[in-house]
Length: 142
Image 1 (cartoon, rainbow, N blue to C red):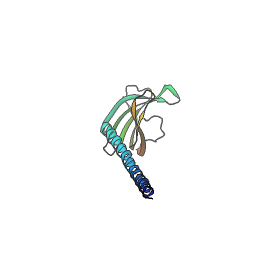
Image 2: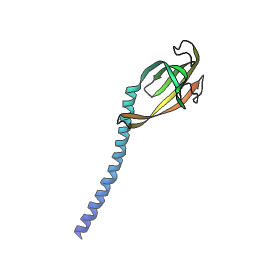
Image 3: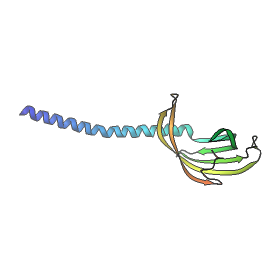
Image 4: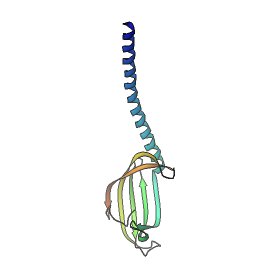
């Protein structure tokens, strides 16, 4: 009888430990997610600029739709503002802007992934917030 009671107590204690362990693993996953977001933020926060680059037709990789110049600012909360100058297809020197588009968005980091080439990358969603001077569906913007 004494051994049965000891066995029941040991099993009860084991299940209690297993139950407690599951909470710490969810905290561990949350800590890992926060660390990935913090690392991404440290790498992307700042001002990024790309001048006079071609925008290709998604259906025909050889066809240029327009040229763009872009200035993007990313803040520590991962919100971003982008100003895009759009130039005509024939204006490969980007001398005369045809349109200015200002976009607001936010980065949502899902985690890290490995590419087919075995490079480590971030899985990121871009959440559109606002746009002035264009539309999110426009083929001539990045």
